[in-house]
Image (cartoon, rainbow, N blue to C red; front, side, top):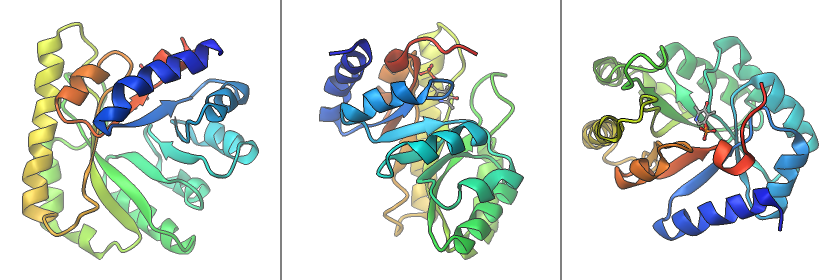
Length: 224
Ligand SMILES: *Cc1c(COP(=O)(O)O)cnc(C)c1O
């Protein structure tokens, strides 16, 4: 068994029984490595650059569920709309609108998560909790029949302070519950909380994550 497959299996044995989904984050890694992990049974892969995703999607098996996990520019939605399964980091209403438009053109529904900005400084992307409340209250999203909001996503601060990470994940979980009750109580598909990466997935799962995005723990260090 290769190192990658060992890494994958170790992780799966930890999370499968908890019903947590694994997004294997394969950005910057060559297709041969993805194929290795695919052959070991992994079907969900996460990429964060459109061009790289395009190249991989063309040559890898068609039953892969591709997730876009990075910052997505509005003008690039059209390239991935025909096949993307889940867009994790929707950070503006404008982007959601464009996803809806391109999904309709492609004759599909595209699942989306709304990115919440909770980390201290790490990323400039994502809705602040109050911006998200406002956006959902305003209600334009209800007209989008091809972009389906399926939950929330966040990145915690990159720190050794576990308490800080835990409190950020808990904050997003609470926000999820609040928004579920207010806007999505009858919408069963609003059910995902994408939280946790190689360094903090255990804390994320304790805080209620349903989907972790793990790269280096499976594929090793990325070469930029
Ligand atoms: C790269 C990336 C990950 C995976 O990071 P690792 O530390 O390698 O597990 C997860 N989420 C997002 C948004 C990323 O960009």
